[in-house]
Amino acid sequence: MDVYVARQPIFDCHKNVYAYELLFRDGTANFVPDIDGDVATNTVLANSILTIGMDVISGGKKSFVNFTRNLLVKKIPLLLPKENIVVEILEDVTAEAEVVLACREMAQKGFLIALDDFEYSDDLEPLIELADIIKFDFRMSSPEEIQSYIDQLAGKNLRLLAEKVETQEEFKLALDMGFELFQGYFFCRPEIMQGKKIPSSQIAQLQIIAEINQPDYDFNTLETLISRDVGISYKLLRYINSPFFAKPNEISSIKQALVYMGGDELRRFMSLMAITELAEGKPHELISLSCIRGKFCELLGRESKYQLKTSELFTVGMFSLIDVIVDQPMAKVMEKLPLSENLVTALVRKKGKLAGFLALSIAYEQGRWSSIATIAERLGIDEAVIPRLYAEACQWSNSVALG
Image 1 (spheres, rainbow, N blue to C red):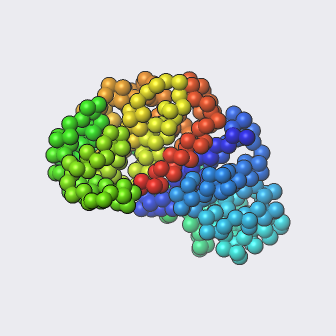
Image 2: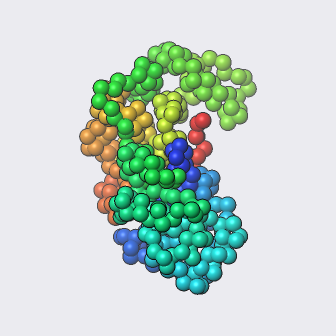
Image 3: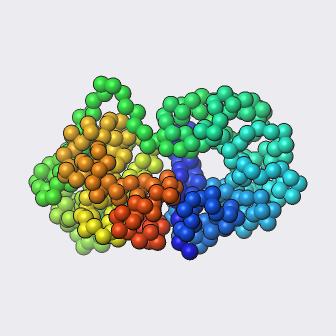
């Protein structure tokens, strides 16, 4: 059976990743509701822990996993490492004695418990007393309704998690309401301010990105641009002199480093370093997600019937969040970043073959399973290989994370 496991980040108030919720789909079903909850959870656990590896899919963070009444009563969470798992109790689970007894044992053994899609009811008090985290769905309930539920929880030692937060305004509202954890794609939205200009320091980094992504980039021009940026110069020399390359002599100049790396490896690594510099002060998840998209698009391209350049596929995924990173419309960023027409068409107008690979990558990361088969068929990609490629992209992102 082909199993899709994606992840959605959960942030703290500083926009640092606290955990990931694991999203599941059975490859033979079209929609998540068609899958029995017990089968879904058992399969996601088997694949994320045994097949893929929890450290790969969650990058060493905690994983929120949905548990049905049946799985709770069978005490399935107790088979898992308490350090890695948050037991998320689905909204349709009632506080019957058998469930409460099982959850009490989990709490006593150190498991964190979260209540999903919370709406206050006196009947839920036994589970509320055992919970550590309460999740509120910002699409399902109005802010006024959520505030009334929060008032009912006053005095309890609970962390509030705002779910499906899709805009920066909603993030700020939830923060003001006392939420400590946040889930949704608000961090993927640029905070565009009218009249704001791209700072000169960012333009210099965009120039590096533009040069390295030219089909025949000039080493002398690239050397000059990199030498002007102390941060990127330091990271490049540190990387090239790492044990990974096992060189007999230390490389001490930018030009030596550029010649030694060469080709696609240089383009990939320099793009990553420049984006890391650009993203200073932004959630690190933006860099991680950019890396996953870049590698995922590249890997998908190798499986496609279309023979596209892997460097362009990597770039379209890697740069898909650059508007968020510099808080400018994508079209304006592209004016400072003269990439190929194929890339501009994909990033600005969402058209062309490259755009299809980016669309497939985004559909997977967001768990929009019903879209994946359609896009994969159009791109000539065997749907069965996609979960493995996503896991590989996550693993690559974990390995190249730059501080």
